[in-house]
Each structure stands twice: as structure tokens, then as C-alpha cells.
Image (cartoon, rainbow, N blue to C red; front, top):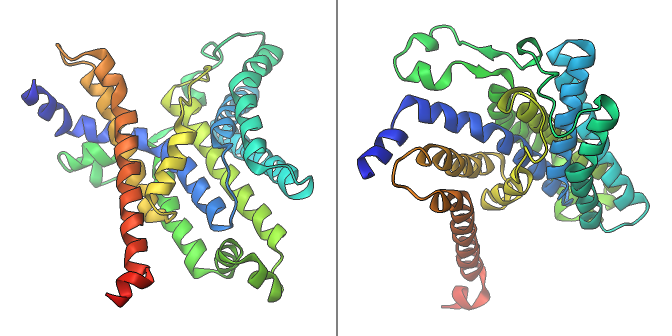
Amino acid sequence: MTNDLLLLIFNADFLFSLIRITAPILFAALGAVIAEKAGVVNIGLEGIMMISALFGVMFAYWTQLWWVGVLGALVVGVLLALMIGFFAFELKTNIILAGIAVNMLGAGGTIFLLSMLTGMKGNTGALVTRELLIPTINIPLIKSIPVLGQVLSGHAVLTYLAFLFVWLMWVLLYKTPLGLNIRAVGENPDAATSIGVSVQKIQYIAIALSGAMAGLGGAFMSMYYSQGWNSGMVAGRGFIALAATAMGRGEPVGTMLSSLLFGLAQALRTKVSGIQGVSSYLVSVIPYLVTIIGLVAYAISIKNKLKKRSPASKGA
């Protein structure tokens, strides 16, 4: 059985699926990063992904253009995030409660919306054709390289964008005036205000970008990964993204690495379930076990870091 597991992991197909599974988690996690940097907690990522996923399919179906579906999902993600921001910043609602409300809307409201818009219940399988799915790209030169070409080439457009956005997010946060303002607002809003930075404006921008990332993650799920929308399709990826952000210490590169770890857990669950003699109950625990181990490791590292900074350790 051990040999079967090793053969499953160390092959091009598994690594290809690892990258594919990681992409939607990474989109949502980057959304959590940009919000956290501005001192905002966007716990509504799960609901934003669900609702954006539905509207991505619907816009693509209405226009018969896949890219309009992706753009529509992005816009819906931004609008939902701005709604959370409006309730939190203008109406002074607890932002956690606002996020939970969006999550509940994503879980139950999408089924009602689907029924109202199409008369269908549960999924959009009858609406989706190959032309409405996000296309895949075979990268010239790389696709011809043995093994490497099988792993890196042939992914959907949004898969490559997810990993490209890691670098773009880092550039935004650390190489632009807007990024400096976002970090200043997140670290010390009073100091940011004293130098003329509008805290509320920056937080609106950050949470809108957060919603855009989650919207792209939703479009990826419905217009490529699942090839259609169905209830429960996001399956906790919005919450996993929050854990990935915590493990990555709120940094784009660290968040990407932790997202890959969660993607690995999801891929293992899928692959290991095909090994004869392995309990399905054991397989279903893998993602949650990895989440717990990762968060424990993160907590220990933070604790050790605080110990090093404590006056007692300096005095010693």
C-alpha cells in the first residue's frame, strides 16, 4: 500500500492536479491577505465564492462568452465585498457578522437565485457547454519537456493568473504608494490619518480587491474545476483560505506555500481514495488533519517568535 501511495504522489498527473486544486484556494487566500493588510477581516470569502461562481456561469450562458462570465464573477465579488464594507464602515455593523451573513446567503440564497433565474434546482449542468468553460493553455516549448510539460502546461488561464497574482500582490503591497498606505492603515490607522491618509477609503479599496480575488476563485470553481455550478461546490475553500493566510503570516509568498500545502491535502484525499484497502473515513480526514497540524505549527512559531522578543529573553 505504501508503494501505491508513493507512485500516486510522485508522478506528473498528481502534481498537475495539485496545482489545479490549489488555484481557487490561492485566489481566496490572496483576497484575505490584502484585506488583512488593511486591518480588515473578510470572513465572507466562502459566500462570495459561491455567489460569484453562480453568476459567472449565468453571465457566460447569457452572453455565450466565457470571459464575460469571468468578468461578471469578478464584479459580483467586488460588489459583495463592498456590501460587507458598507455595513461595517458606514452602519458600524460587526464585520464578522456581515461576513457570516454573506456566507449564509452563499449557502442558501444561491439555490433560490438559481431556481428564480433558470427554474433549475441544485446545479447548472444543463446550461454549461465546453465553449463556456475557461480555456486551457498549452505553453510553447515547456509543453514538449518530459514530465515538466505534463505538470506546468495545459492548465486553465485562471490557474496561471492565480500564481501570477502572488507576485503582483507583493509588488502592490511593497512597491507602490497604495500598498504603503494599505500597510500603514492596517498597522496604525491613527498614524495613517495623521499624515492625511483616508483610512476608510483605503479599507474600501482593500476589501474590494479582496472580493475581486474571491470572485475569480468562484469563477474558477464553476467555469473550470466543476464545469458548472452546484450547491456546496466551494466546500469550505473560503475558510481554508483564511487558515492558509494565517499560516503564511499574511504575506503573499508564504500564503502561496501554505495554499499549496492545503492543495496537497485535497489532492491526497482524491488520489488516496482510489487505493484499495484504504478506509474512506480516513481519507476524508486528511484535509482537516493537515489544517490542524499547520495551524499548530504556525501557533508554535508565533509563540517562539514572541519569546525571543520578550524583555526576559533579552535580559538573559
